[in-house]
Image (cartoon, rainbow over all chains, first blue to last red; front, top):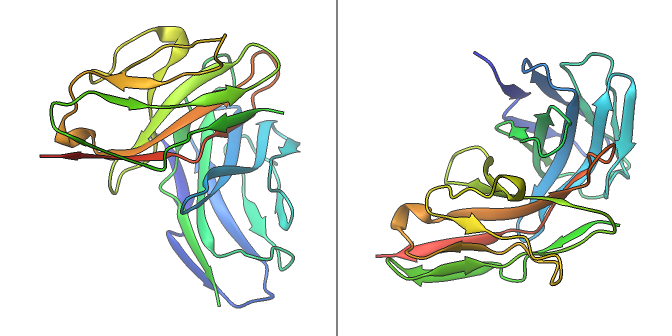
Length: 113
Length: 110
């Protein structure tokens, strides 16, 4: 079953704790992306990666960190420095070439209490 | 900087009426533009891309470089078109940053 998988679907954490969201794809895609989706804000880009061991900050990278040690995996860590971490997080992947379609995961809803 | 603006958060039309979802962009080079759609309880998915010049589910979008716009249109809206629509932009070549607008929630009433 090919695609992009995010886990878990729901995640609860206490304030002050770091938490890591998983994103795995078996589409052999080079590019991967993390977005945050808030009501009325659309999708805001957190980090993106074109290739293993390389990634770039998006528009709202503060308080987040990522790694890209494997082509198929792009985990996102929400650190305690993120002031408003409660949100819906979406991961996507694409071939990274011109006019390529991005494929999205089902998302992870993170609630920090 | 690249930016996508969707001026309407909400758009409500009656079945059979024409619909136009607006999208304006800001980008210094040659952009690649897309429309993505998210139906209730489904994943965000590609609807169409400007390079293909295709009509998907009756929707079309024309890139107007002079007005820096990429509006999505459909002549006769259907109830199943009700969804959240996002306009997106990426650069060409090595710029693979994919930026989305804030989205427009389209409701088609019976």
